[in-house]
Image 1 (cartoon, one colour):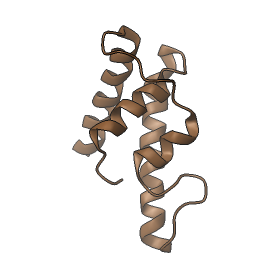
Image 2 (cartoon, one colour):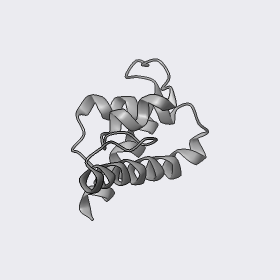
Image 3 (cartoon, rainbow, N blue to C red):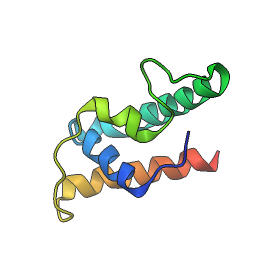
Length: 94
């Protein structure tokens, strides 16, 4: 997976907010795995993955129709962002 930009983390959290809180952790793991798979696909095939994009979080998340950007005092948004950060820490430690 290509290193994400901070703005991608916000959009990632916004995409998670469209789903029940109890499913967000698993969804975040799946998105990261799919983004990694898309990046591997490009390296092996010299073309983007037809369904998963170009190996960036942005390409994987935008088709999920993220909600509009909330204010930073929205606890639901902050919880979703915390999930994103936690899963990214775990992902990059591997």
